[in-house]
Length: 339
Image (cartoon, rainbow, N blue to C red; front, side, top):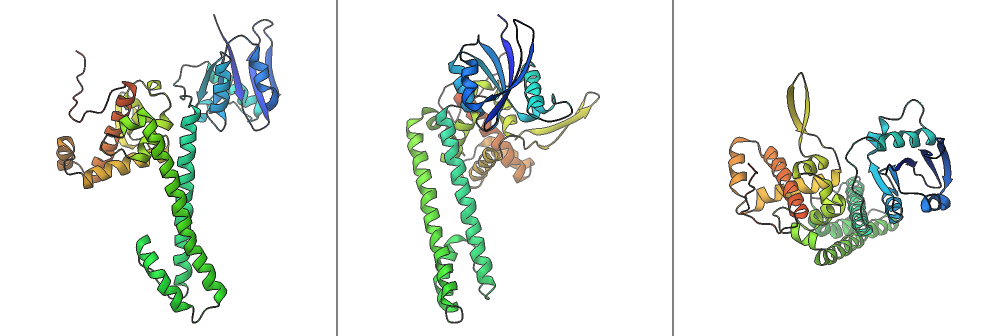
């Protein structure tokens, strides 16, 4: 049975749908109110519905799948190739309709729990950014009055009470009180970050996938929870290399005439997960007592940063293998390629 292909351009209030009616052959491209969107597909025969992987897409995909429809989420840059000339809702819906009929790798649809964990990561990341801004702001203001603070948060907390006491003799009390309030606010931000991390640890205890990849060297709490949440369904990737390419830690390729040139890593995909993997690999190389023979051999012939990225690539592949094959991590496991 050939399912009707439908392109949906989602938005805040008005969605645009584009499809060809199989009964009449009529080309349909019309807006639908948000409240009427699910009702439009409730009594229809199963369709192949394409949407861009953007804000709200995973929610609508889950709702449509409950009705029996097949949903395909696609990267926006893939859809962009099918948008000809003007860009508007009708043209976007048509471009999505064209794109959903092409063979391509769909974005794995995340569960509500996976999205919830990603929400915790985003909120934690935002708090850390705000805390860093707050610290830099304090340093800059104190420098205006001739007080240069030492590097590091610990030294800042140790020195700032004495600094505020010293400059209080020559500055208005309102300025000193405000600076002290800003400094005390750092502790509140610390507590909010710690609370989010405690909730992540609780999820780690309950989720077997997070527990399994948490045994891999270089994979800590943040990397384990972020990898499981961002990956969605691990079987959406055909191999560990494909997952590493999705993260953006494989060489970028250019070439022509049968000649392929390899460059630095592509840096495609999610920057946050890629950063966590590289930091984890750096931790293994710098702190592990026995990083492994593979790492030791590579360190002899390659620069340190290249080794770090190569190990991050290996960690990403190991994460995929553990999740896709549903097996525990084994340090001495050797992959045997079929003959």
